[in-house]
Image 1 (cartoon, rainbow, N blue to C red):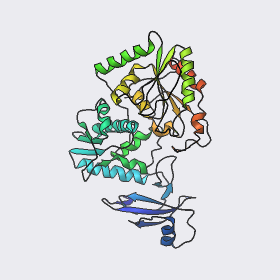
Image 2 (image 1 turned 45 degrees about the vertical axis):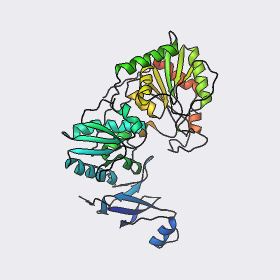
Image 3 (image 1 turned 90 degrees about the horizontal axis):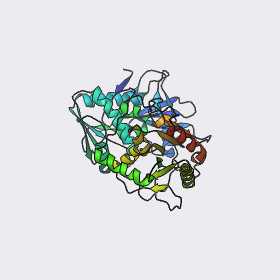
Image 4 (image 1 turned 30 degrees about the vertical axis):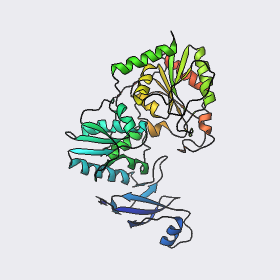
Length: 390
């Protein structure tokens, strides 16, 4: 080993030059709370080019060639000149040590429902990686109903609430790691936290027949005859954050889809309904359970979605997807085997990862014409969309 594996509260503080990534100093268990503290500790007046990052589970760096890089998304990463990612090595070693000595593996989930499904993808592979293990996953109680419809084996169980175990796999650690891993996407880093590096196939959502029947009845009520149904998710957060499209474009899209024989059902969260006079626009935000949302996705002919849980649900139900990308990127989020029609907003600053951008220039550049064209391609079967890996 070229570094020492430490556990518990051990961490290494790494001081580096922002301009070059050169590591200028390391200290064990040294937390630097401010720029003033940084100047005082290093004994220099100018710290504008000096950055600090922390490596949990590392006591010291040995050998030469280490440097710090900042990937497009995620935390700062310490790597060798050959590209070895120290944070990933530590996470893999720690996970394998913990999982290897326990028959029951406790896992704390993190993020939104879309992140949950990516973690399910990683768990699906973990079950094969570690035979004869039971995985107990701690999750948001409102999401258990849908997670139990994911086609994971019986050795994976979902428990409401926050973990109380002293040792566990903490998926929240992803916030300090690099998850820019094209072509595998964010699921790759969830896999790292479970102790492996592999391409990860995606899970499937399998709904009971009564939910499928309910959704098909809802579809019939909306269409009132022939035509096609578009499930649309346009808003992230309340109020809308930078991943969101624009309501006026939703209305224009609905009117244009109506001219082509289609209708639109809008999915989303509580408080997202908007007053509208547009015909053929059916709002179901905030009134459906996660199971019912998935059922409506399944009953649609095509899904138009921003980077959101709805997009991830559609992927795992083998539905055609037209995805809309602004501050985030499909290379960060989606696994490479998800073949769909992505539309990216034209902005020189994207993908920036900033959800608090007020102007939302990137999403504003996604034109209704482009979305309509992509939807009609999908409906006519000319898009070449395939789902070829499970």
